[in-house]
Amino acid sequence: MTAPESGTAAPPAPRPAPRHGPADPVKILMHRHRTLCERAVDPLEIAAGLEAHGVTDRAAARFRHRDVFSLAEELYARVPRADEPERAAAEEPGADPPPVAPAPAPLSRVARAAVQLLPGAIGLATVAAHASVRTPTGHVLTAVDATGLLLTVLAVRLALRHGPLRLRRGPGSRAAVLWAAWTVGYAVYGDWLLAQLLSGGPDVPGPHPRAAVAAAVALACALAPAAGCAHWFAVRARRGLTTSRALSELASRVRPLLVGATLLFLVTAAALALGARLLLAGAGSPGGRTAVAAVCVLAVLLFLARLLSAHGFPTAAAAGLGTAAALEAAAPALVLAARLPGLARLGTPVEVLVRAAGPAAVPAVAGALAALGLLVHGLRALTGACAHPPAPEPDRRGGTPATDPAEDRRS
Image (cartoon, rainbow, N blue to C red; front, side):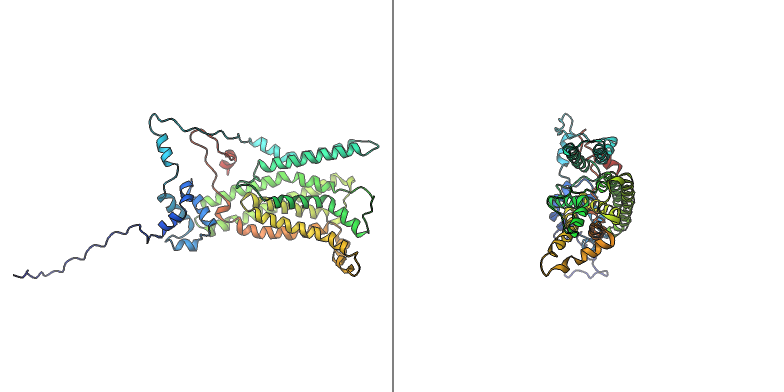
């Protein structure tokens, strides 16, 4: 017998539920960045790491997400944390808490402010001590100046290690330190040297090198407002990272902050340079009419270079400072080369520039070109999520993080 025919068709077989298998693109990304996802304490940290590896909003669309932030949220939810087994074991009744390594105590807000003001205070004290010492020989004055210089350098190093301008991502570039020292040294003695070369000198033995004391004092005093502007930028940039839902939105928030911080510091540096020039009018200015402009440009260049280094871009900072140092070194080199037979025209551009605006025009032009390049690079590099990592949270077991928690919490 045959089965009776049914008047209704058999229902279609149900489709199997989708499984997270090899066809799951997010799972492939999980395996590729598993270490990053396991160690992350926040989805924003995963977003910063993905952006550092070249994952953009357009690439996130291939993983079925509208932007990198939503992709990071799924990775954070699907990948277990590396410290979850230890945390679960610590929460068991009767379990001994794991040992906590001691960390250095962070500086208070007052101590950090005093550290940032210390280089300028030592510089002013050195100038005052130099002016008060009256001796027929120069040995005492040389000792006073050398001691003041050493203390100022140590104070600058201390201020850069404790504060908003400290490096948070490993050691910085040694080349950046070298080029920064060159540009500061040229700001103090370069104008005098260039003027001597253009006049046919320097004679050996000749007059004692004439230092731009006002420029040195202004640069030392500018460290405190540089730290303040860097902190202002970091606080608002991290706040924009928290509220942004796309990389383009984050970039639109951070770019005005960078320009505003740079302009704010430029105004402050100009006020300090003018004040130092009026206060130390008796010391003279070997740079001429553009001495104040040269100090302002150099201060902005150093500020942008340190800001890039503090946010994870020391190579770009070294390139900008190296460009300025190369242009400054080229000016006296061309003047010296012009003394050779048949090469007299090499020194003509430098002579024309110095005759029109003074010796300080050379570092002013060199610093302006380098600072403009760093600002353009910063508008692209400092607007990414990887440049603003989330602030680390204090240890719940009573430990203290390695970074300064008070400042990061205010950020």
